[in-house]
Image (cartoon, rainbow, N blue to C red):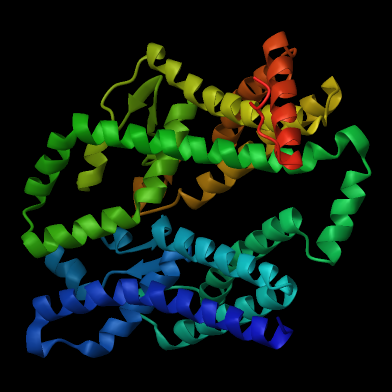
Length: 425
Protein backbone atom coordinates (compact mmCIF):
# COMPACT_ATOMS: atom_id res chain seq x y z
CA UNK A 1 0.00 0.00 0.00
CA UNK A 2 1.29 3.43 -0.90
CA UNK A 3 2.50 5.66 1.92
CA UNK A 4 0.04 8.41 0.99
CA UNK A 5 -2.86 5.99 1.32
CA UNK A 6 -1.57 4.78 4.69
CA UNK A 7 -1.20 8.39 5.88
CA UNK A 8 -4.74 9.26 4.79
CA UNK A 9 -6.22 6.18 6.47
CA UNK A 10 -4.26 6.86 9.66
CA UNK A 11 -5.47 10.47 9.65
CA UNK A 12 -9.04 9.24 9.20
CA UNK A 13 -8.60 6.84 12.15
CA UNK A 14 -7.39 9.71 14.34
CA UNK A 15 -10.31 11.91 13.34
CA UNK A 16 -12.80 9.09 14.03
CA UNK A 17 -11.25 8.40 17.45
CA UNK A 18 -11.50 12.05 18.45
CA UNK A 19 -15.03 12.37 17.05
CA UNK A 20 -16.27 9.32 18.95
CA UNK A 21 -14.77 10.60 22.18
CA UNK A 22 -16.44 13.97 21.76
CA UNK A 23 -19.76 12.39 20.71
CA UNK A 24 -19.81 10.11 23.76
CA UNK A 25 -19.69 13.22 25.94
CA UNK A 26 -21.78 15.53 23.79
CA UNK A 27 -24.79 13.22 23.38
CA UNK A 28 -25.68 12.79 27.08
CA UNK A 29 -24.78 16.41 27.82
CA UNK A 30 -27.16 17.59 25.10
CA UNK A 31 -29.96 15.46 26.57
CA UNK A 32 -29.17 16.74 30.06
CA UNK A 33 -29.09 20.32 28.81
CA UNK A 34 -32.48 19.90 27.14
CA UNK A 35 -34.17 18.23 30.11
CA UNK A 36 -32.70 20.65 32.64
CA UNK A 37 -33.07 23.99 30.88
CA UNK A 38 -35.59 23.36 28.13
CA UNK A 39 -36.07 25.96 25.43
CA UNK A 40 -34.30 28.61 27.51
CA UNK A 41 -31.03 26.67 27.58
CA UNK A 42 -27.85 28.60 26.90
CA UNK A 43 -26.49 26.36 24.15
CA UNK A 44 -23.35 28.46 23.91
CA UNK A 45 -22.07 26.85 27.12
CA UNK A 46 -22.56 23.26 25.92
CA UNK A 47 -19.46 23.06 23.71
CA UNK A 48 -17.05 24.60 26.26
CA UNK A 49 -18.21 22.09 28.89
CA UNK A 50 -17.89 19.19 26.43
CA UNK A 51 -14.39 20.22 25.33
CA UNK A 52 -13.24 20.68 28.92
CA UNK A 53 -14.52 17.23 29.92
CA UNK A 54 -12.88 15.69 26.82
CA UNK A 55 -9.51 17.09 27.83
CA UNK A 56 -10.13 16.05 31.45
CA UNK A 57 -10.83 12.49 30.30
CA UNK A 58 -7.33 12.38 28.82
CA UNK A 59 -5.66 13.40 32.07
CA UNK A 60 -5.65 17.20 31.80
CA UNK A 61 -6.34 18.75 35.24
CA UNK A 62 -9.11 21.32 35.61
CA UNK A 63 -8.73 24.46 37.70
CA UNK A 64 -12.20 24.82 39.22
CA UNK A 65 -13.39 28.21 40.41
CA UNK A 66 -16.83 28.41 42.03
CA UNK A 67 -18.61 31.68 41.12
CA UNK A 68 -18.95 34.20 43.95
CA UNK A 69 -22.75 34.15 43.87
CA UNK A 70 -22.74 30.37 44.35
CA UNK A 71 -20.27 30.69 47.23
CA UNK A 72 -22.55 33.20 48.97
CA UNK A 73 -25.73 31.23 48.30
CA UNK A 74 -24.37 27.88 49.51
CA UNK A 75 -22.12 29.10 52.32
CA UNK A 76 -18.97 27.50 50.91
CA UNK A 77 -15.78 28.60 52.63
CA UNK A 78 -13.88 31.06 50.41
CA UNK A 79 -10.71 28.96 50.55
CA UNK A 80 -12.66 25.98 49.20
CA UNK A 81 -14.04 27.91 46.23
CA UNK A 82 -10.98 27.18 44.10
CA UNK A 83 -9.32 23.80 43.72
CA UNK A 84 -7.78 21.48 41.15
CA UNK A 85 -9.73 18.52 39.78
CA UNK A 86 -7.15 16.00 38.57
CA UNK A 87 -8.56 12.51 39.28
CA UNK A 88 -9.41 11.70 35.68
CA UNK A 89 -12.06 9.22 34.49
CA UNK A 90 -9.87 6.78 32.59
CA UNK A 91 -12.56 5.25 30.35
CA UNK A 92 -12.01 7.84 27.61
CA UNK A 93 -8.24 7.67 28.15
CA UNK A 94 -8.10 3.93 27.47
CA UNK A 95 -10.53 4.17 24.57
CA UNK A 96 -8.20 6.63 22.82
CA UNK A 97 -5.19 4.47 23.69
CA UNK A 98 -6.75 1.29 22.27
CA UNK A 99 -8.08 3.05 19.17
CA UNK A 100 -4.61 4.40 18.55
CA UNK A 101 -3.14 0.90 18.95
CA UNK A 102 -5.62 -0.40 16.38
CA UNK A 103 -4.63 2.31 13.92
CA UNK A 104 -0.92 1.67 14.45
CA UNK A 105 -1.38 -2.04 13.90
CA UNK A 106 -3.23 -1.40 10.64
CA UNK A 107 -0.46 0.92 9.45
CA UNK A 108 2.15 -1.70 10.30
CA UNK A 109 0.22 -4.40 8.43
CA UNK A 110 0.14 -2.06 5.42
CA UNK A 111 3.95 -1.82 5.51
CA UNK A 112 4.34 1.86 6.45
CA UNK A 113 3.91 2.08 10.19
CA UNK A 114 6.14 5.13 10.66
CA UNK A 115 4.09 7.12 8.16
CA UNK A 116 0.84 5.99 9.76
CA UNK A 117 1.93 6.78 13.32
CA UNK A 118 3.21 10.24 12.40
CA UNK A 119 0.11 11.11 10.35
CA UNK A 120 -2.33 9.88 12.97
CA UNK A 121 -0.51 11.61 15.81
CA UNK A 122 -0.32 14.89 13.91
CA UNK A 123 -4.04 14.88 13.08
CA UNK A 124 -5.03 14.01 16.64
CA UNK A 125 -2.79 16.80 17.94
CA UNK A 126 -4.41 19.25 15.51
CA UNK A 127 -7.88 18.22 16.71
CA UNK A 128 -6.75 18.58 20.33
CA UNK A 129 -5.50 22.08 19.56
CA UNK A 130 -8.79 22.97 17.87
CA UNK A 131 -10.80 21.75 20.84
CA UNK A 132 -8.49 23.52 23.28
CA UNK A 133 -8.76 26.84 21.47
CA UNK A 134 -12.54 26.76 20.97
CA UNK A 135 -13.81 25.11 24.16
CA UNK A 136 -13.02 27.20 27.25
CA UNK A 137 -15.41 26.89 30.19
CA UNK A 138 -15.76 29.75 32.67
CA UNK A 139 -16.05 27.65 35.84
CA UNK A 140 -13.25 25.24 34.95
CA UNK A 141 -10.15 26.00 32.91
CA UNK A 142 -7.38 23.71 31.73
CA UNK A 143 -3.81 24.64 30.74
CA UNK A 144 -3.89 25.02 26.96
CA UNK A 145 -0.58 23.29 26.33
CA UNK A 146 -1.52 20.30 28.49
CA UNK A 147 -4.92 20.12 26.84
CA UNK A 148 -3.17 19.74 23.50
CA UNK A 149 -0.20 17.63 24.55
CA UNK A 150 -1.82 14.97 26.76
CA UNK A 151 -4.62 13.78 24.42
CA UNK A 152 -2.21 13.72 21.49
CA UNK A 153 0.37 11.84 23.57
CA UNK A 154 -2.20 9.21 24.60
CA UNK A 155 -3.15 8.53 20.98
CA UNK A 156 0.47 8.60 19.79
CA UNK A 157 1.64 6.15 22.47
CA UNK A 158 -1.18 3.75 21.63
CA UNK A 159 -0.48 3.99 17.90
CA UNK A 160 3.24 3.49 18.39
CA UNK A 161 2.72 0.50 20.70
CA UNK A 162 0.32 -1.20 18.29
CA UNK A 163 2.61 -0.62 15.31
CA UNK A 164 5.76 -1.88 17.03
CA UNK A 165 4.02 -4.94 18.49
CA UNK A 166 2.78 -5.96 15.04
CA UNK A 167 6.10 -5.18 13.35
CA UNK A 168 8.00 -7.20 15.96
CA UNK A 169 5.89 -10.31 15.42
CA UNK A 170 5.28 -10.03 11.67
CA UNK A 171 8.24 -7.96 10.46
CA UNK A 172 8.37 -4.58 8.76
CA UNK A 173 11.33 -4.82 6.40
CA UNK A 174 12.91 -1.89 8.21
CA UNK A 175 14.27 -0.83 11.61
CA UNK A 176 12.22 -3.31 13.67
CA UNK A 177 13.49 -6.23 11.57
CA UNK A 178 17.06 -5.04 11.99
CA UNK A 179 16.57 -4.81 15.74
CA UNK A 180 14.93 -8.25 15.74
CA UNK A 181 17.89 -9.74 13.86
CA UNK A 182 20.28 -8.15 16.36
CA UNK A 183 18.37 -9.64 19.30
CA UNK A 184 18.25 -13.06 17.60
CA UNK A 185 22.04 -13.00 17.60
CA UNK A 186 22.11 -13.17 21.38
CA UNK A 187 21.70 -16.94 21.30
CA UNK A 188 20.11 -18.38 24.42
CA UNK A 189 19.38 -14.85 25.67
CA UNK A 190 17.44 -13.76 22.57
CA UNK A 191 13.93 -14.45 23.98
CA UNK A 192 14.51 -12.40 27.14
CA UNK A 193 13.18 -9.06 25.87
CA UNK A 194 10.17 -10.38 23.96
CA UNK A 195 9.07 -12.87 26.61
CA UNK A 196 9.46 -10.28 29.36
CA UNK A 197 7.02 -7.99 27.56
CA UNK A 198 4.66 -10.87 26.84
CA UNK A 199 4.75 -12.05 30.45
CA UNK A 200 4.13 -8.55 31.81
CA UNK A 201 1.14 -8.18 29.48
CA UNK A 202 -0.28 -11.44 30.84
CA UNK A 203 0.22 -10.20 34.40
CA UNK A 204 -1.62 -6.94 33.72
CA UNK A 205 -4.54 -8.71 32.05
CA UNK A 206 -4.77 -11.19 34.93
CA UNK A 207 -4.60 -8.41 37.54
CA UNK A 208 -7.34 -6.39 35.87
CA UNK A 209 -9.49 -9.50 35.60
CA UNK A 210 -9.07 -10.32 39.28
CA UNK A 211 -9.69 -6.67 40.19
CA UNK A 212 -12.92 -6.69 38.17
CA UNK A 213 -14.00 -9.84 39.97
CA UNK A 214 -13.22 -8.25 43.34
CA UNK A 215 -15.16 -5.13 42.43
CA UNK A 216 -18.12 -7.31 41.43
CA UNK A 217 -18.01 -9.15 44.74
CA UNK A 218 -17.95 -5.87 46.68
CA UNK A 219 -20.90 -4.62 44.63
CA UNK A 220 -22.89 -7.69 45.67
CA UNK A 221 -21.84 -7.48 49.33
CA UNK A 222 -22.18 -3.72 49.77
CA UNK A 223 -24.77 -2.81 47.19
CA UNK A 224 -27.08 -1.67 49.97
CA UNK A 225 -24.61 1.03 50.99
CA UNK A 226 -24.48 2.31 47.43
CA UNK A 227 -28.29 2.49 47.26
CA UNK A 228 -28.38 4.29 50.61
CA UNK A 229 -25.97 6.94 49.31
CA UNK A 230 -28.15 7.44 46.24
CA UNK A 231 -31.13 7.98 48.53
CA UNK A 232 -29.18 10.37 50.76
CA UNK A 233 -28.25 12.46 47.72
CA UNK A 234 -31.99 13.11 47.11
CA UNK A 235 -31.64 13.25 43.34
CA UNK A 236 -34.32 12.57 40.76
CA UNK A 237 -34.08 10.01 37.96
CA UNK A 238 -32.12 12.41 35.76
CA UNK A 239 -29.64 13.18 38.51
CA UNK A 240 -29.22 9.49 39.34
CA UNK A 241 -28.56 8.76 35.67
CA UNK A 242 -25.91 11.47 35.45
CA UNK A 243 -24.19 10.19 38.61
CA UNK A 244 -24.23 6.62 37.32
CA UNK A 245 -22.74 7.59 33.95
CA UNK A 246 -20.01 9.54 35.71
CA UNK A 247 -19.17 6.57 37.91
CA UNK A 248 -19.03 4.25 34.90
CA UNK A 249 -16.47 6.59 33.35
CA UNK A 250 -14.35 6.04 36.47
CA UNK A 251 -14.59 2.24 36.27
CA UNK A 252 -10.99 1.76 34.99
CA UNK A 253 -9.80 4.05 37.80
CA UNK A 254 -11.62 1.89 40.35
CA UNK A 255 -10.03 -1.25 38.86
CA UNK A 256 -6.57 0.22 39.50
CA UNK A 257 -7.61 1.01 43.07
CA UNK A 258 -8.79 -2.58 43.50
CA UNK A 259 -5.51 -3.92 42.09
CA UNK A 260 -3.55 -1.82 44.58
CA UNK A 261 -5.74 -3.16 47.39
CA UNK A 262 -5.10 -6.75 46.28
CA UNK A 263 -1.36 -6.09 46.10
CA UNK A 264 -1.33 -4.89 49.72
CA UNK A 265 -0.50 -1.16 49.80
CA UNK A 266 -4.11 -0.10 49.17
CA UNK A 267 -5.11 3.45 48.34
CA UNK A 268 -6.16 6.73 49.93
CA UNK A 269 -9.54 8.46 49.90
CA UNK A 270 -8.36 11.75 51.35
CA UNK A 271 -5.20 12.96 53.03
CA UNK A 272 -4.16 10.77 55.96
CA UNK A 273 -6.46 7.88 55.02
CA UNK A 274 -5.70 4.30 54.02
CA UNK A 275 -7.82 1.52 52.58
CA UNK A 276 -5.83 -1.73 52.51
CA UNK A 277 -6.23 -5.41 53.47
CA UNK A 278 -4.27 -4.83 56.68
CA UNK A 279 -6.56 -2.05 57.89
CA UNK A 280 -8.89 0.75 56.87
CA UNK A 281 -8.58 4.26 58.26
CA UNK A 282 -11.12 6.68 56.87
CA UNK A 283 -12.33 10.07 57.91
CA UNK A 284 -15.35 11.78 56.42
CA UNK A 285 -15.90 10.34 52.93
CA UNK A 286 -17.74 12.25 50.19
CA UNK A 287 -21.26 11.01 49.59
CA UNK A 288 -20.45 9.59 46.17
CA UNK A 289 -22.47 6.36 45.82
CA UNK A 290 -19.63 4.23 44.45
CA UNK A 291 -17.57 4.96 47.57
CA UNK A 292 -20.10 2.85 49.46
CA UNK A 293 -18.13 -0.14 48.12
CA UNK A 294 -15.16 0.72 50.36
CA UNK A 295 -14.55 -1.98 52.97
CA UNK A 296 -15.20 -0.72 56.48
CA UNK A 297 -12.56 -2.81 58.23
CA UNK A 298 -9.38 -4.65 57.42
CA UNK A 299 -7.50 -7.50 59.04
CA UNK A 300 -3.98 -8.82 58.98
CA UNK A 301 -5.43 -12.11 57.76
CA UNK A 302 -6.87 -10.36 54.72
CA UNK A 303 -3.31 -9.98 53.43
CA UNK A 304 -3.81 -13.48 52.01
CA UNK A 305 -5.16 -11.65 48.94
CA UNK A 306 -1.54 -10.88 47.94
CA UNK A 307 -1.48 -14.47 46.72
CA UNK A 308 -3.54 -13.30 43.76
CA UNK A 309 -0.80 -11.08 42.25
CA UNK A 310 1.63 -13.94 42.94
CA UNK A 311 -0.72 -16.25 41.06
CA UNK A 312 -0.82 -13.75 38.18
CA UNK A 313 2.97 -13.89 38.02
CA UNK A 314 2.82 -17.69 38.12
CA UNK A 315 0.37 -17.78 35.20
CA UNK A 316 2.67 -15.53 33.21
CA UNK A 317 5.65 -17.71 34.10
CA UNK A 318 3.81 -20.86 33.07
CA UNK A 319 2.72 -19.44 29.71
CA UNK A 320 6.20 -18.12 28.96
CA UNK A 321 7.79 -21.40 30.05
CA UNK A 322 5.49 -23.35 27.73
CA UNK A 323 6.67 -21.32 24.74
CA UNK A 324 10.32 -21.60 25.75
CA UNK A 325 10.02 -25.39 26.05
CA UNK A 326 8.35 -25.63 22.66
CA UNK A 327 10.94 -23.42 20.93
CA UNK A 328 13.88 -24.96 22.86
CA UNK A 329 15.25 -21.54 23.78
CA UNK A 330 16.44 -19.96 27.03
CA UNK A 331 17.38 -23.38 28.34
CA UNK A 332 19.82 -22.11 30.96
CA UNK A 333 18.98 -20.73 34.37
CA UNK A 334 20.43 -17.31 33.58
CA UNK A 335 18.11 -16.38 30.70
CA UNK A 336 15.05 -17.66 32.54
CA UNK A 337 15.98 -15.72 35.66
CA UNK A 338 16.40 -12.63 33.48
CA UNK A 339 12.94 -13.19 31.98
CA UNK A 340 11.41 -13.52 35.46
CA UNK A 341 13.15 -10.32 36.51
CA UNK A 342 12.05 -8.57 33.31
CA UNK A 343 8.42 -9.58 33.85
CA UNK A 344 8.53 -8.28 37.41
CA UNK A 345 10.25 -5.02 36.45
CA UNK A 346 7.87 -4.26 33.58
CA UNK A 347 4.86 -5.15 35.73
CA UNK A 348 6.11 -2.84 38.47
CA UNK A 349 6.66 -0.03 35.97
CA UNK A 350 3.16 -0.49 34.57
CA UNK A 351 1.74 -0.49 38.11
CA UNK A 352 3.51 2.79 38.90
CA UNK A 353 2.17 4.38 35.71
CA UNK A 354 -1.38 3.18 36.42
CA UNK A 355 -1.14 4.52 39.96
CA UNK A 356 -0.14 7.95 38.64
CA UNK A 357 -3.07 7.91 36.21
CA UNK A 358 -5.55 6.70 38.84
CA UNK A 359 -4.66 9.20 41.57
CA UNK A 360 -5.31 12.88 41.98
CA UNK A 361 -7.61 15.46 43.51
CA UNK A 362 -11.39 15.86 43.53
CA UNK A 363 -11.68 18.85 45.81
CA UNK A 364 -10.00 21.22 48.27
CA UNK A 365 -8.30 20.30 51.53
CA UNK A 366 -8.00 16.62 52.33
CA UNK A 367 -9.77 15.66 49.09
CA UNK A 368 -6.62 16.64 47.21
CA UNK A 369 -5.17 13.12 47.75
CA UNK A 370 -6.99 10.12 46.33
CA UNK A 371 -5.79 6.88 44.81
CA UNK A 372 -2.84 4.51 45.21
CA UNK A 373 0.70 5.69 45.84
CA UNK A 374 2.94 4.75 42.89
CA UNK A 375 6.02 3.69 44.88
CA UNK A 376 4.45 1.16 47.28
CA UNK A 377 2.13 -0.19 44.59
CA UNK A 378 4.98 -0.74 42.13
CA UNK A 379 7.22 -2.33 44.77
CA UNK A 380 4.52 -4.72 45.93
CA UNK A 381 3.60 -5.78 42.40
CA UNK A 382 7.25 -6.21 41.44
CA UNK A 383 8.06 -8.47 44.39
CA UNK A 384 4.87 -10.52 44.19
CA UNK A 385 5.07 -11.07 40.43
CA UNK A 386 8.76 -11.96 40.71
CA UNK A 387 7.96 -14.68 43.23
CA UNK A 388 5.21 -16.20 41.09
CA UNK A 389 7.08 -15.99 37.79
CA UNK A 390 10.35 -17.30 39.24
CA UNK A 391 8.63 -20.35 40.74
CA UNK A 392 7.39 -21.48 37.32
CA UNK A 393 10.31 -20.36 35.18
CA UNK A 394 13.11 -21.70 37.38
CA UNK A 395 11.51 -24.98 38.42
CA UNK A 396 13.38 -28.03 37.06
CA UNK A 397 11.82 -29.81 34.10
CA UNK A 398 10.15 -33.10 35.02
CA UNK A 399 9.70 -36.27 32.99
CA UNK A 400 6.07 -35.52 32.14
CA UNK A 401 6.99 -32.15 30.65
CA UNK A 402 9.77 -33.67 28.55
CA UNK A 403 7.50 -36.47 27.34
CA UNK A 404 4.73 -34.01 26.46
CA UNK A 405 7.23 -31.89 24.54
CA UNK A 406 8.42 -34.89 22.50
CA UNK A 407 4.84 -35.92 21.77
CA UNK A 408 3.84 -32.44 20.64
CA UNK A 409 6.85 -32.18 18.37
CA UNK A 410 6.18 -35.60 16.85
CA UNK A 411 2.56 -34.65 16.11
CA UNK A 412 3.67 -31.37 14.54
CA UNK A 413 6.21 -33.14 12.32
CA UNK A 414 3.63 -35.72 11.21
CA UNK A 415 1.15 -32.96 10.41
CA UNK A 416 3.74 -31.22 8.23
CA UNK A 417 4.33 -34.47 6.34
CA UNK A 418 0.57 -34.82 5.74
CA UNK A 419 0.28 -38.00 7.77
CA UNK A 420 -2.22 -38.68 10.54
CA UNK A 421 -0.47 -38.55 13.94
CA UNK A 422 -2.49 -41.58 15.11
CA UNK A 423 -2.21 -43.58 11.87
CA UNK A 424 0.18 -46.20 13.30
CA UNK A 425 -1.70 -46.67 16.56
